[in-house]
Image 1 (cartoon, rainbow, N blue to C red):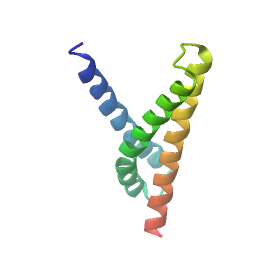
Image 2: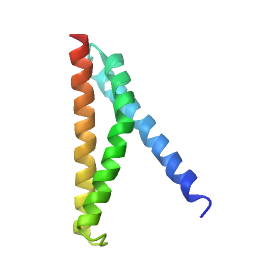
Image 3: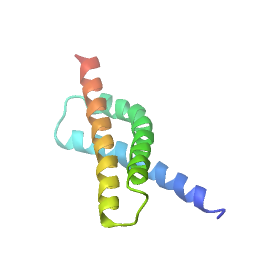
Length: 100
């Protein structure tokens, strides 16, 4: 059990870096005029969104009784993805608002 926390922490850092890198690469590939600003805002918003997504996933699992059915897995994934999509959308809106 001594290795569980480092695995979780490493996975979280990996997901954070991949999230920021994917936003940066996507915006550069689409020739966006402000990929740097959006990437910086995403870097700030993503830890908050990640924590909220974790809470949403845990809450969804709790409401469904922490069952191991496919319905619970799908519901948790949908809840987490909705929060993360909202996080990226708010970060993008914030980045565009502050540059206008």
